[in-house]
Amino acid sequence: MGNGPDGQCPTPGGQSRTCLILAIVQGVLTLLGLGFSLLPWLGDASLCRQQPGLCLNDLHRHSWWLTPPTNFWAGVAAVCMLRGSLECKTWCRSWWLSTAFDLQVLVAPVSLACFALLGWQAISAGALHSAACARLAVTATASSGFDADAVAISSDGDAAADASHCAYPSRAVFTYAFLSIVMQIHAACAVCAAFVVRAQQQKAEAAASTSKGKGEPRSGERVRGWRKRINAEGRTFYEHRRTGRVEWEPPLSSSDVEEGRSDSGFESCLSGSEGRLPRVDEG
Image 1 (cartoon, rainbow, N blue to C red):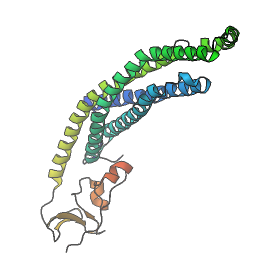
Image 2: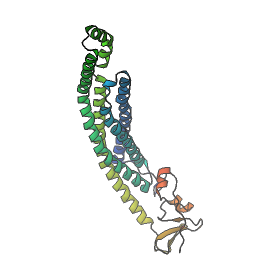
Image 3: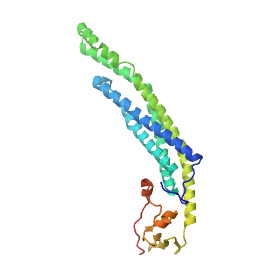
Image 4: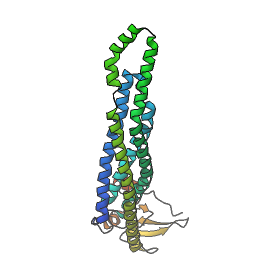
């Protein structure tokens, strides 16, 4: 990563360490959430192949469409928070933290909704499964008619299958309950992270504005190879004397000044390289 305006990475403080801890916790929760989200769907797909009447697709559909995407974006927020905590450039640091804050604000309420939905599924899964087994038993009895021999043969042949298929779905209930707890912790972490990241972002923006104010050149003044110019639209830009490169923001670090580079553009924060802006005609 690049250096800050003073050429040194800022020493992580208490808030930075808190960001790191929250990012690690969210990363672990993301892996757990994504892994356990697959279990009910895979288990129900296997059961549907054996006993279509016991499918609980309607029950799984809501958690399948909500839980994995929420865990994914929580992981993205954790990565942004981690990157912002370790970023040396004040402008990029502010951008990463701002992105993390926006994602945390979105993840928190959706995680809370997933917590409530998964909790309801954990409570109702057993009752829905028992009702499906009862319907299967009634259907089997009705299809056998009043033939006692047919009923006996059907009962003997399906006894083992009914015992295995209609057992209490303890694994599904445990999975839903565990996922519900994971999403509850996700929501709590997202709320805490939003507050911490907001404070970090404000600190980074204040540091960036202070550094920018100190490094702002006067009109027409050359600062180690750069000249402040104004184009035909009245917009201020900075032109490098040797390379002719044009930047919208004043160069802050010594390496940027010497090489004709400045720390601008989202691409520089995403790729870790220095951003380049197109030439601007003076008009």
